[in-house]
Image (cartoon, rainbow, N blue to C red; front, side):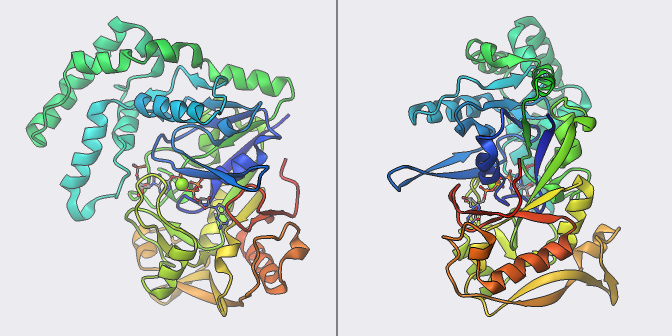
Length: 432
Ligand code: GDP
Ligand code: IMO
Ligand code: MG
């Protein structure tokens, strides 16, 4: 059986968590392969009595909510152990079975000095800041690349852990004290903090690459769930206004140990409009009443930091770029219901950069910074979409919007979101 990747096609918060949850019952493993607790996935599950349960996940893969599915934290993830156990305890208190969780021995650990460094560097950068989530993500990936990171497996050997912490604090302690005037945690404090989790952690840790490849050998289905998104990817995003991991489908392989030859479906999650949290260029951004309208109707406030998300119209140039970079086979277009009640719905089809039309992402980042969207104006609709379950249930203009966007975006739109709950989805082509 093939592996399937779910990736964000814009700047994050496209509704990846809901999409993963939707497919959860049909897959055997859900793997988080990049990022850490900078992610925020809201999943809403309708109950038999008509009420709904809302979960906010940061570090755990959304598949943890599906009975029978094995959630995996892959080698490409950076793990804050305090957050891991807080999130697990929160789910257990709500009756969720978390016993199947498996964690890669090669995943890196976010230590206290990296959380501090993330925050103080942002303050130091001032107007050049990235607008990070402050969770220590960037400094921890920097340590990984710098070959001074602490891995999950190091926690089980106190001698090795101490050696590694001593090495890294030799360097980072100086930076924190001399540049930022901060007292870092001592070697003893850091080792103690990390060792405190060893006993609870041990039964979850394994060679997850082996586990997943053996599952594929047995014809089981493995779903690889991205945190963040294409335009936040450290290679393919709007660098330097990106996160520090590989959030695209290539990252799904390196971050899980599943080879590219076993990945045969890539599902791109794309919002019917665009949002972004943090700093950086955003051509279709609306700094007016229309942007405020999208933020209000779409409840566009960050799941992780609570920051208001910047809002703008759908950008087909970005969708085509995401389709190309990831090899998207199917798009899930989310939050179509939020566009209800607009006379005309603008869609960006290309950019104007200093009088030149760009149908693809400009090569040069500075051009992207002052790209002016060229809009096509599609007819709006007034009907409530939330009860639609088939494409035919949608009003004609909403169908026309989906078809127009599909024609511009480089892959078929196989499902459409019409509300936050798992059930509020129109499926055009079965995804698994
Ligand atoms: P993720 O980070 O990609 O998993 O997305 P987030 O969970 O951060 O943000 C998506 C938000 O939109 C969540 O609050 C979801 O409950 C909600 N959502 C997802 N799909 C839909 C949809 O089709 N319609 C509406 N109205 N809300 C949706
Ligand atoms: P999900 O998985 C939206 C943004 C931050 C900041 C930049 C770098 O919910 O889609 P970091 O803390 O990662 O070093 O911050 O990336 N960012 C996200 N924006 N959704 C996310 O995750 C994000 N994770 C990071 O706002 O601009
Ligand atoms: Mg999110």
